[in-house]
Image (tube, rainbow, N blue to C red; front, side, top):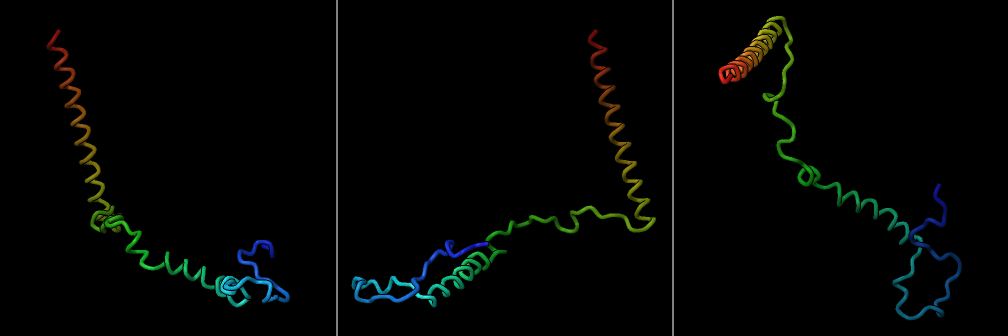
Length: 113
C-alpha cells in the first residue's frame, strides 16, 4: 500500500508565515485544493490524450481478412461432400505431379548413362 511518502506534490500543513517567503513565490505554493485538482485531472488528461481517436491512430488497414477470403466450414451433407471431393482432387493432383517429377528425374538421369 502506498503511504504518505509516495506523494508527488507535498502540501505543507500547519501555519505558514507569509513574511518568511520571498516575494513572488505565492504561485509556487500548493494547498490541498490544488493537489486534489492535479490528482484528479492528471489521469483524466492522460486518458483523454491516449483515448481519443484510437481507431484512427492505431488501426492497421485490411488487418482482418474479408469474409469471402476466410475458410468456411461445411454445414450440411452436400457441402461436406463437395469439400471432400475437392480435397481428394487436390490430393490426386499433387500425387500425379510428384509422380511426373519422379519420372522426369529418373528418365533424365537414365539416358545419360
